[in-house]
Image (cartoon, rainbow, N blue to C red; front, side):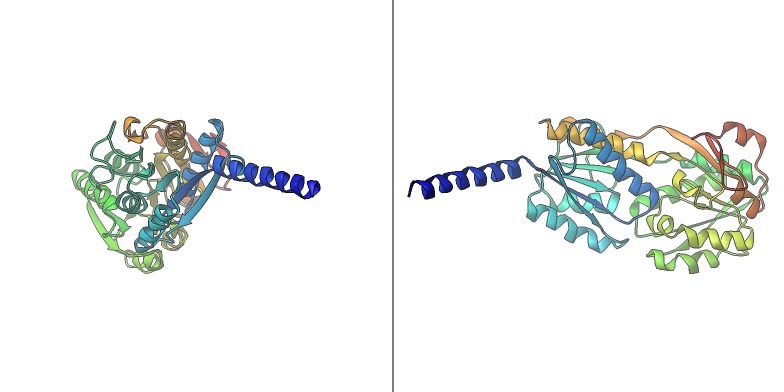
Length: 329
């Protein structure tokens, strides 16, 4: 009888220990609109920042990572699951993902990243201390400066093409600024619209013969299907420029853009503050600011562009005609 009592006591202690260990685990829901290198690097940076602050996956943190597969309608069920599961914190990568979480997950701390304009899209009432359950990092790009810089690669280009989803309010801000910049330089912006990555190939083919160069901005459908755009541009010698650096080694000529690992890293540092007890609304939401120029000489050769020496001198990272990095790291 005594042995049974001791075994029961040991079992009780064991169960209590398991429950305590389980209670110490922090549950983080991470959602992104689609998979592509920029957003994936955002996620990696977020995880790295948390690790540096003592929040390690598998040790005291459990991640529930969800991907909307490029469909905005999938963002809300993901947000609802996080809310139903009562996760401790949400990392929302991209505007659609963040909008869904803000609307559904009342009371749960939310850290957004890779969001162009969190104020105009209703994610936060203002940058700085929001006073809400939301903070994060905006990836707003210097569109006008990008347009002016890319024009130097192809000074004779007058007809600039772009492809985007008009239903993505994030992207429409960029397109409006791009159009104004192109027209200011004496050119014309020619648009092709898509609603998903499956339509990108047809959209880029529709621009052949109508444009002198193509500039792809922050549209997630296009970035996730960039290989289709690169293929058509290579076949037709259309210079291709992009806004995110991770698309340069994939076949674009150049990008003046952000390091998305650092975007996620900064968001991760904010998340760590929350997990240590600080309120999200007291942690300033802000913009990423470090932009660098990457150039792919192999893509330039295929697409018929001679890169000016001034741009090569300015570049932070360069791939040669064989795809080898010859400047930067």
